[in-house]
Amino acid sequence: MAITRLAGFLFLFSTHCYITTLAVVLKTANKAPWANEFESVELSCLIQSITTLEPRIEWKKIKNGDPSYVYFEKKIAGDLVNRARIREPATLVILNTTRSDTALYRCEVTAPGDHKSFDEILIDLVVRVKPVVPQCSVPKSVPVGKSAELRCVENEGFPQPQYQWFRNKEEIPEDPKSSPKFLNSSYTLNANSGTLKFSAVRKEDAGEYYCKAKNDAGHSQCGPQMMEVYDINIAGIVLGVLVIVLVLLSITVGICCAYKRGYFTSQQQTGNNYKAPAKGDGVDYVRTEDEGDFRHKSSFVI
Image (cartoon, rainbow, N blue to C red; front, side):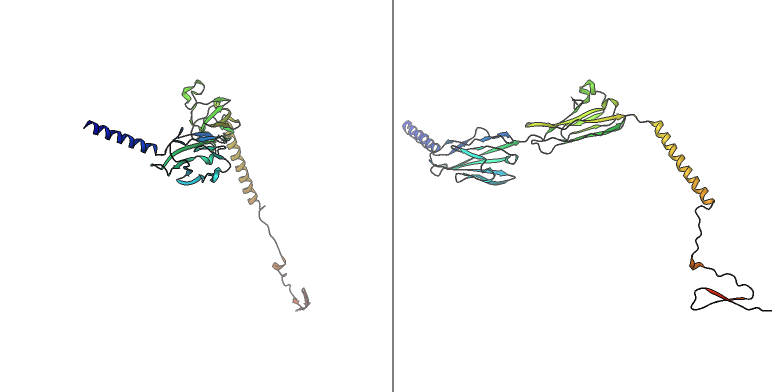
């Protein structure tokens, strides 16, 4: 009985080893590699076990759910032509990465001579892009006590950059209460959107401002821009309004006086409004057909 069990165990063990030996198995050194744009990156696809001498190796790129070949029939294909190569036996090396290379990549190995003839492995590649110089908007002058908004925008960097604001070359903290220099400032800073908002500007908020966009690939910043803060001259504003009112009142009075004195009335007389002179006693005025003027004949009545 014991001998029978031992024989069965040896049979199962040998069968398991046989199946394992005849199975293609893949592994990778890194399932989520990354690279900065224009650098090289390696997508490792390692064949852990195989018996087929010439397996079929394929690489596919999956972008937005759509697969496309990047290595097929022992040739680089698609948008990686002249930018990639295969390092034996199945590792894909991209020599000059671009932002469009960010995608899922699938290594597929088919071994017809193995009991388990197919295996695949999925690799998620991220190509990081350094931010370009952001577009910064800083108001040139703001009155004391008024609100102000500073904006910083950058659309090229990947991953999405974080934003930092600086005043006179000193970084502005996200929380003004964390720094004695900004403790009394009434601003809110959004590091994700790049906006710096003042609810009530103070004299101390004047200075040179610039913004920096930063991610894992690097950073870029815009040039400094001056924001002035000035006091509102209430007395000057009131005086200006009074002057304008007086000027308008003077103009109105002048126009009324001119109307009363007849400066805006005129009489025009034209040839069509000609009025014949009154007919005198003993004189008849006759207009001939071939003459455009009047002649008279005399008739005296006694």
